[in-house]
Image (cartoon, rainbow, N blue to C red; front, side, top):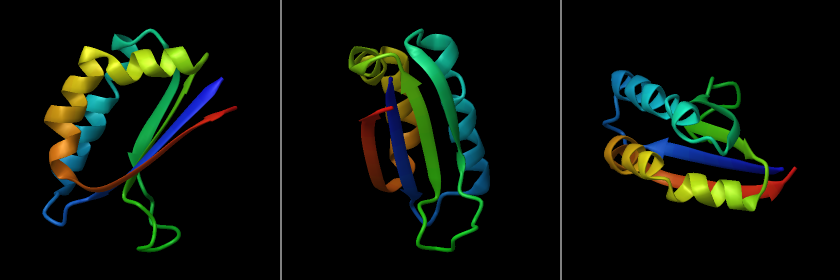
Length: 98
C-alpha cells in the first residue's frame, strides 16, 4: 500500500466557507477515481496550536501506480487547480509505503 499525506496552510483571506467548499470538492474524488482505496480530509482541529498546518488529506492506494493515476487524473487536476490551489499559501506532501 501507498499512503499519500498532504497538508496545506491557507492564505489569510481564506474563509471558513471556502474551506468547506474545498472539502466538499475533495470529497468527490473517491467516487471519480477508482484507484483510491481510502480517502480522508479535513481542517485541523487546533489541538496543537498555530504551528500545525490548516488542512490535511490522507489517501491510500494499492501501489505507487495507483497514486500516479490519481495524481494525473483529470478530475483530481480540475479540483486541485480550480478549487484548492488558489487558496494555498504553503503545501507539504509525502508518499510512503504502508
